[in-house]
View 1 (cartoon, rainbow, N blue to C red):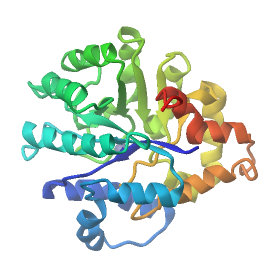
View 2: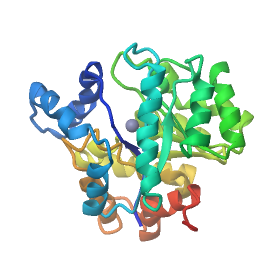
View 3: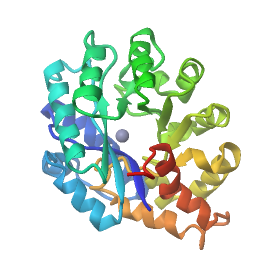
Length: 309
Ligand SMILES: [Zn+2]
């Protein structure tokens, strides 16, 4: 079973966000040594990314053998183009796609807690749209454990929702102090029952995530954005992954693609295949079949309570 816990379903893409969205895939191209043209990537981005009904997503899941995907929206209160109405329209469109495919998809709402109406937006997403949790992009400049956020987290814990919070440095204008995994420590104290997935496990700052995930029972991490390192520097990746598993415990590590953001450069199937081959070839490190099965799907199956679906 393969479960992807972090996929951006993009029903609308404001013009002003395109440059920002393509920056990371272009960096990924650099890491894996693939030559790309910025203007060409930019020009093809809307067609590649925008997926109003989730058709591209479902086709990709069938092609890649992905059984279940957690889809999410992203909100950024700094961007004036993203009005509360647009946020809610985006969340509703994402929820509709998930509700049409409940055996294959689950949706998390993108809500920036700095919005005065954030709690109302989240309540509508959970109670009216049937969404299952919340996605934070804290690098946009807010503390996931700040006072505005706490209102939302209290509600989310009460509703048994999931928080997927971005961690790890990104290009400016990301304010990366807020993306330090250590920002999640208060949440583990004040909302001990809230399931939290640290997107990217903090990436290069994974040790900060690992130090918490080893101790906070409900803190998990996903492997989104690790594909470029895995595919270009497999030995380094295997060393890091082995250390993470040994330090934190296998049950905390979840596969995620961050699709479709990087697929233009690195199709997600390449990373899935890479992970599947690790029991045969761990580049000097050992990985059991059980461990890879746990990462690719079994851990997420338990975390998301999918067994009875
Ligand atoms: Zn992401």
